[in-house]
Length: 196
Image 1 (tube, one colour):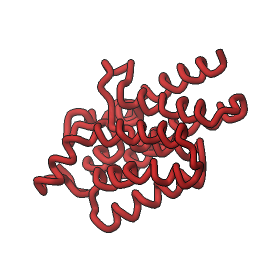
Image 2 (cartoon, one colour):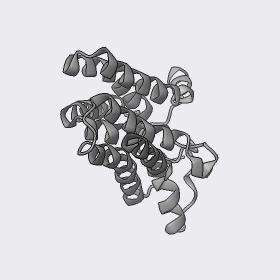
Image 3 (cartoon, one colour):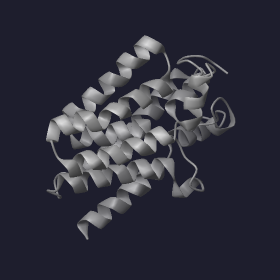
Image 4 (tube, helix red, strand yellow):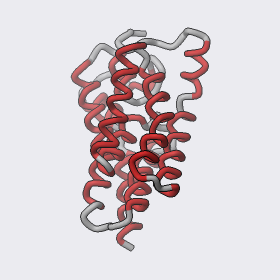
């Protein structure tokens, strides 16, 4: 019962969207109406509002981190903690509040991973930052980070179950970037900081 409550809480928390809420509150343009039309921090950055983008990033990471962090004190199973974090990501990607049309789940995934294992999360974030620094593409940075996530997880835990759960998470996040993959192949993907 405790696990089910955390799963529900995590999904509902994940379904809230910082970019939409903050944009509406501050009377800014809905992020689903410009740029990539993705309600996430990277697309908010395209509007030029760096503070709003940072607030969105922190919010989206927190809704992945907080359910896992709280559950850590009540649930002993590593796999169940992963599942709780993944539910937050699924909430972000398929939010009940927005007709199941959400973002790509990168920031929420990083938050969930940090809540599960701080070192593993920091390694994934470092991979994102290095790739972003070298190539200036947010989507490419996400794809590279989540390709390596199962590899990092295996070397950290040497567990088929734990690795498999993050492999599935990686598949979800990478699949959500399918349009970005096309753009990257066609050399039409927008670089970080560029405005549309």
